[in-house]
Amino acid sequence: MVILEAKGIKKYFGGVVALSNGNLKCRKGRITGLLGANGSGKSTLSKIIAGVYRADAGEIIYEGKAVHYRNPHEARQNGIALVFQNLSLVPDLTVWQNIVLGMEKNRGLFLENEEARALSRAILENLMPDLDIEKKVYQLSPSEMQVVEIAKAISSNPRLLILDEPTAALEQHEVKNLFEYMRKLANEGVAMIFTSHRLWEVMEICDDVTIFRNGEDVATIDFDKEEKDPDKIIGYITGE
Ligand code: ADP
Ligand code: MG
Image (cartoon, rainbow, N blue to C red; front, side):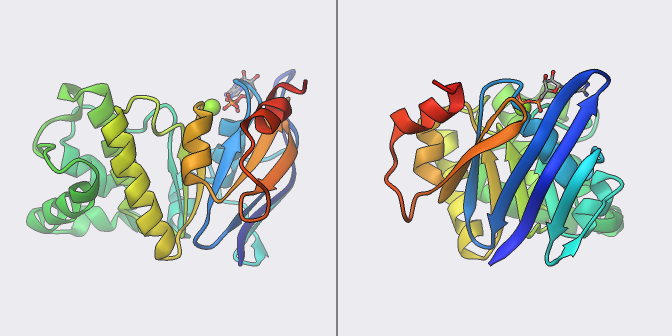
């Protein structure tokens, strides 16, 4: 079941064309890879879907209707959460405070502190069980910060979770934990968009992949129907 479709998305930043014709489909319970060279428009598309930017043209169809979220908060209330490539954490708040900041409609602010801590622990249990939730975010290592960013997005119980380069700062065993958790979420019906520079990660975790080049999608490969051929994928990325 298609949960989200981006159709003919265009986005300009001054004279720069970030997206000239972006198309992408996400399905319930499936992990869609988003691949493309630096600057090909992946983060811009992710941010448009998550309500950070508004598209200059094109449509986002989500759960059957055209949507225009004005900010990430509104998108989150409607079940779309983004793990930002350039994290969105508040350094002076603790791990658990940051995680509940991701919750819908400030529900996190109304939780009793103990309840909020328990919720944070429950999410981190799968990702990084030893992380001290009382630490301030500025005290964390890059990989710990990344995991908190992921936990923050998950705390809103999204139906579409967008992970923009979530593994860049992670060690291999942390990537393994994340992938196990992503598969668990997919089995619960969550749709995901996963961006990574590492092709092997995309081939390992994704059910299908869409490749962007110069602001437009140039190919989509469904791994249920087509073999995982890295050379072919690299060909689409580079255009050679
Ligand atoms: P990717 O995530 O695939 O590396 P981006 O979506 O970040 O690509 O960027 C696509 C293009 O848009 C690049 O040329 C980038 O420099 C430009 N761009 C992205 N965000 C902005 C912005 N906020 N202001 C100006 N240019 C931007
Ligand atoms: Mg990016």
